[in-house]
Image (cartoon, rainbow, N blue to C red; front, side, top):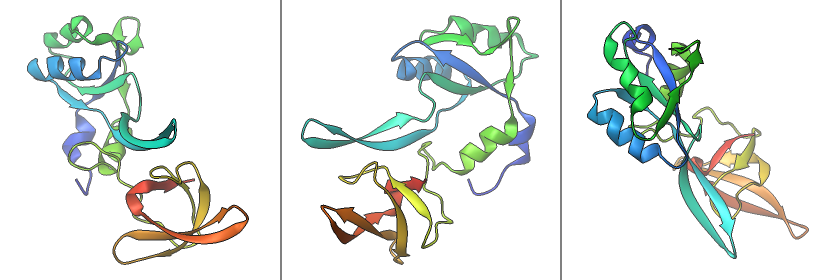
Length: 173
């Protein structure tokens, strides 16, 4: 998706709070009921013991975007769906999420909902490394190669070292 579809802005999105560790269960059951879902995920690298593990996790843990028409009676079934705790709202009625927010999130995602790195990074921009052995380092971009690799300078053990990392492994600091 490279542009905002006008239909995106007309159809409201809502936010469902999920039960703990129930994202996949909720997704499966809501898809079965015919709801349109969106759950942006991001890639994270964490140090576990002596190893680095790269995993995908939801950008908003415990929540899922759902698109439906509140004028139709079927939306009330969401609250009793396995994996869903409740629809976020006021006074028992769900509150819509700004359509522009969801549309902008969807523009930053690929086909499966994974957040892509910003395409407008330039040399000199401050970034945070989110994947690989240098995860959580904050540095600046030295240069960007045509093969979408970013060259950064890291201060490791008192020496400045030039390191290449994939563009997917960074985010703006």
